[in-house]
Length: 475
Ligand code: MN
Ligand code: MN
Image 1 (cartoon, rainbow, N blue to C red):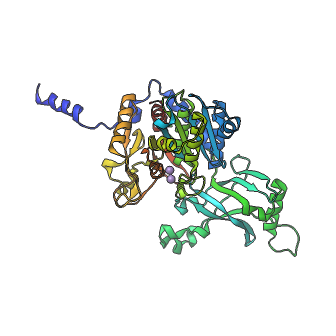
Image 2 (cartoon, rainbow, N blue to C red; image 1 turned 45 degrees about the horizontal axis):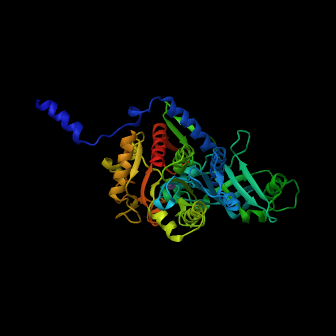
Image 3 (cartoon, rainbow, N blue to C red; image 1 turned 90 degrees about the horizontal axis):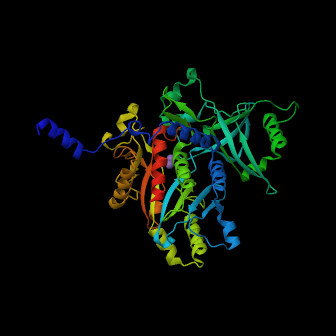
């Protein structure tokens, strides 16, 4: 062998290979990738809030034979392997499971994503009039760059619970015939002072007010005639009064549908892909899971973007309670020790996104450990900030397990860190899952413009993510 071929041999044998998803795609046909993206776009368009995303998922789950946990409890039925069960927590968080052949005590294969996304929530007292215009005050939810939310069309989604307990569902701004809501911004001619401010201060939280009306009532001697006119309109449409806003959850999100991005249509641009991309891939994976050896569990949490607190967030007892109920239904009697073993003995993927290397902002990434759009599934061993603060840091053994699985199944993967050291950071639900004793690894796709009104994901990445999740459930 000459030196030239030896070098090539060493190269092939020793060096880590970075794969571009488009060069290894597609498990047979490239059309599968684009067809999958079309289905995913429907989910993005119909699931623009955690409630609507959960609704969409429940509909598909029921069509695939998943039964509500509450009904199974009421019927006293014993859950046999292959039984499909789901539980919807207050319309915002969801767990779906396919019962495995092995008892739960042996552990489960869990994929945990989140359904909430950064947005602007209406305040409890939102409605006011200023200078002959009516406005809604908002309180932003999750981490946003406030300047991105002004002068773009926003839609309003959510629920209003009236004084008598009636629930009103609201969707304004998604249909092309609908009006949209807008936050105004200062004209450049008068923005000299604003433009000299830091970006964190140029647009303030209290400045994120939605313009919602401009036509006053015709009566002469009334105050706040535009506000009253808007209330009259709302009363006519929904039967609500001003006090009803107190018991409402109304979310302003970017209006409009998911779009193809790029002349080759390789990218999806849409609001809320963190983390509806992993949610959808996990949904499709569990819908297509037959009777597995270990119970397959898809977890779709709420409140991740605000720290996973609250009874629909990952720090709640939702998962533990679900598993306890399933143990009671599969084994006939509940035993806490079995529940603890089931949780601690589980393998979990924390299904969430990572930041793709953006050539316009290279400085914040360390290239050797950054993920890329089109680089395949992203394995993120740890998140956190500074000295790995607040990360569960997956165990090397478990990273090896996932790596081997993906290599065996031909799933292209890459690794990612959330930015260069000391440039910032973030977290996922991984640490809360890990608290229950299970092994957890963050596993999702890379996004450009994460948390922006329009986030970007590679269609190729989305497709292999779904393939990877499916392989994980089936092991
Ligand atoms: Mn996320
Ligand atoms: Mn996020």
